[in-house]
Length: 121
Image 1 (cartoon, rainbow, N blue to C red):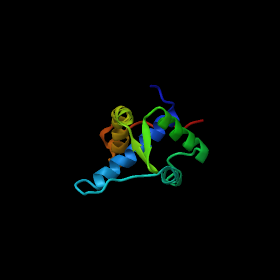
Image 2 (tube, rainbow, N blue to C red):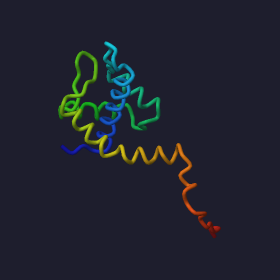
Image 3 (cartoon, rainbow, N blue to C red):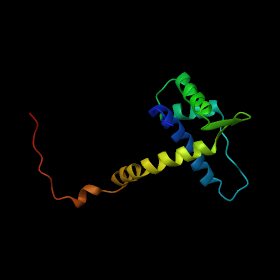
Image 4 (cartoon, rainbow, N blue to C red):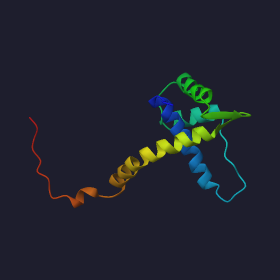
């Protein structure tokens, strides 16, 4: 199934949220859960997505309609199909994220010879 970029981004953010909380509560009898409203306010207040609230709801509804996420009670959960899609996107994107983080955390430019700079006209 082909998802649009905003839909993939919403699925990716939801997957990252659950991955981080599963790491945080590893070995404990807690299971994180998140409802739609909290997820939308989280991504908007963190500045991760600049779309409107209605657009985020529509993306979540599309993901639910295509059985990538489901609601149990008022909580968002991945379906096996959704988890598989998230893992696929994560494997594709993670090398780029890792390289970007390396550039930010280390002084990578020190390995280069001095580069000549010119004034722009």
